[in-house]
View 1 (cartoon, one colour):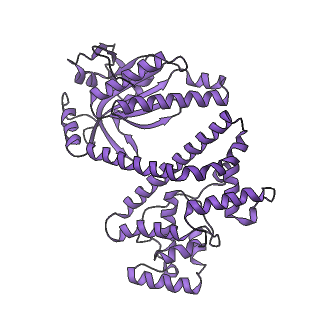
View 2 (cartoon, one colour):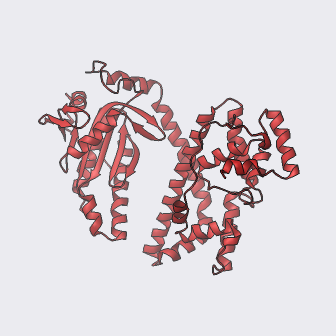
View 3 (cartoon, rainbow, N blue to C red):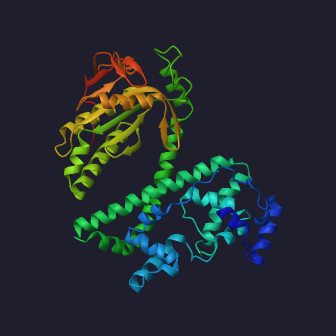
Length: 427
């Protein structure tokens, strides 16, 4: 039986159903008993259920296992010390803002929305699949649900945009939390000589001291980043598009894309073979050092780190000159770093599409292809990007032989080298 059929066949308790019906009538939304095949409040497709493999992987973490067991009391491991269970319960109450007292149907009904719509919001946030009888939610969860759905009902957001914004929060905070937990665990393993499982258990006692400062820093950083994004809008976007017109005839593949950006890639040379010879700790240190250095250089250069993929970093800058400075600084800094291998760096100035925190388009694809062509310790750009840097004495351009590039035909790559000046100065 599908989950939808299961939903339709189980009715909420009488008081909850009455509340749901009253709210639904006021908001002209269907009650759960009369839920349509396509919900009218949030109509985007819901993501697929979590697989058993994903759930099993999550339970490999002792802390996650304990938390999951608390969510399903019948699965509590009786060998877990009572003190540890109590500590997690206290920490959970502080994090969630209240005790879990509500089931999914009760929260949806109290918010005046069908279970289908509520479930889409929860899945966008990354919540696990829940049964009707699981007591998972609090009044704070109800308020969050009403907040997001209220903006849809008021017409502030479309349904698709509400889901997209919610998913951005869910995915980014999930990655952020995993990063922070692993950093704290690594610190305890290295500096307090704990085993990994022991560090994860002891983390429960450390987190209460960190919640408030990390939360405040998160809000502060979000506001700062949003302010920086505002400055990249409108006039600066138009200026970038105007600059990207130079030397183009309008037949390019990226002509319809809305943003002009310098797109760069940097990857570590021989990373795969090195990683096979490294132990877990050494590999972690290498990756962390690589990412930290890249993030610092990109930030100082006024660019934005889009994402890291193992041994590779993708970044953007608003002008070809800024992108070139970042690319050269990366090549220089990694060549001078005795603990890291050399890098191959590429840079392409063109138009892109920015969606879901990532970037897309032919410009991105060409930059990726050039990275594979670049020699270790060099920065490779294309002819169009080189034309934007001609006459700037901070850069030296060395044209290379015409090369066939998959998906782009023959291109004329150019090696970018530092010219006059000190380049990007790092503190």
